[in-house]
Each structure stands twice: as structure tokens, then as C-alpha cells.
Length: 115
Image (cartoon, rainbow, N blue to C red; front, side):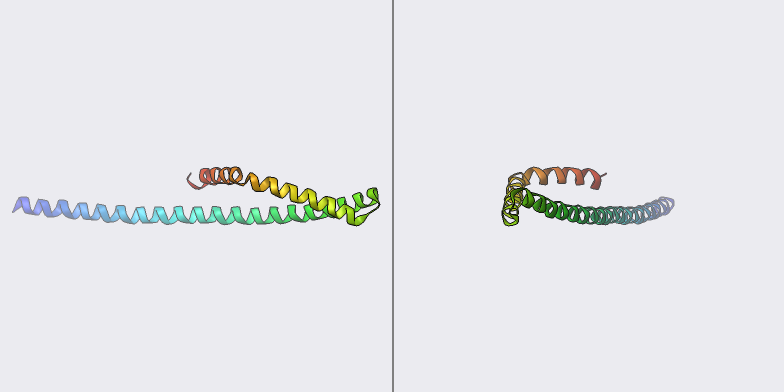
């Protein structure tokens, strides 16, 4: 009977150790998921705030540039056309480099996300 009792105690200890391990692992992954969620939410909030301010600044620069160019060319509609054309050229350049931009963003986020 001593061997059977010893096996029972050993298996009980192994079960207890396994349950403790599973609980701690679950707690760890819960905290890790919370950390990643908090990081993502923080990054998204900062990105939204900065991008909206940059967008407003860009709008003011474009309007100011149109007015200044309109005075220089003595034609406000011509200045709007020139600025619009420049913005379309910039958009096309960004479109052609979109894969490079995606790669850079994914690299940056993967370093932060998986650390």
C-alpha cells in the first residue's frame, strides 16, 4: 500500500502544480493582453490627436499659400488650380510609395507590440 499512497500523493502534487501553472499562465496572458490593448489605445489616441492638428495646420498653410500665390499671379482661381495640382502630385507620389510606408509602419509596430 505504501507505493500506491506515494503515487497518489505525487499525482496530487502534480495536479496542484499543474493547476497553479495554468492559473498563473492565464493571469500573465490577461495582463499581457491588457498591456497591448492599452498601448494600442494610447498610440491610436496620440496618432489621432497629432494627425488632426497636422491636418488643421496643413489646411491653413494651403489657404495661406493660395491667397499669397493668388496675389502674386493676380488670379485666385489660377492659384487654386496650381495648389490643387501640387497636392495631387504629392498624393500620387505617396500612392506609389505606399508599400514602403506600410512596411515601415509594420516594422515599427511589431517592435513595440511583441516586446
